[in-house]
Structure formats: structure tokens, C-alpha cells
Image 1 (cartoon, rainbow, N blue to C red):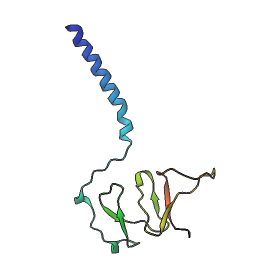
Image 2: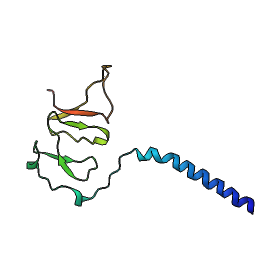
Image 3: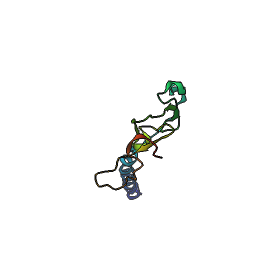
Length: 112
């Protein structure tokens, strides 16, 4: 019986070690805790572009980004552009198109 008790300690250490190894990977993510009481009372007239959009968490209304303002970024942290604007990510020096949804861009007039 004493041998079994020692074995459980080994199993517990292995389980804790495996879980601990996963921790930092999840800690790097974006976590939303939505509390409507923390949302600012905001009307479209309060915004430079007179338009509101949902924040990255989908919890609160925030001002839409206007021309030449930063947009996108990791988890959409820099916000969404107003209607008629695109979040344009500058191409890197390689000239290849950017497909990274987490890249920061600039709100730019849609090209017609």
C-alpha cells in the first residue's frame, strides 16, 4: 500500500507540470470580461465620425475610427473604421500582401 501512495505523488507532479506548461500559452490571449456598468454612455453625436461600433469584446459601443486613425491590431484592439473606410495594412518591404488579421492598419477611404 505504501508503494501506491508514492505513485500517486508522482502522478500528481506530472499532471501539475503538464498543466503548468500550458498556462503561459493561454495567458497570452485576449480575455473579455463584459460589464455593461463600465460602458461609457455614448451617442453617435459624441464621436468625430458620428458613428459607433462594438468594442473588440462586443460589449460596449465605442466611436468608430475615422480617416488616418489606427485600426485593427491584435484582437481588433485599435478599433473598427467608420462606414466608407477600410482598415488598410501597409505592405511590408517584401511587397507581399499582408494577410495577418492581427496587423495594425490605418483607416483609409475606400478606393472606387
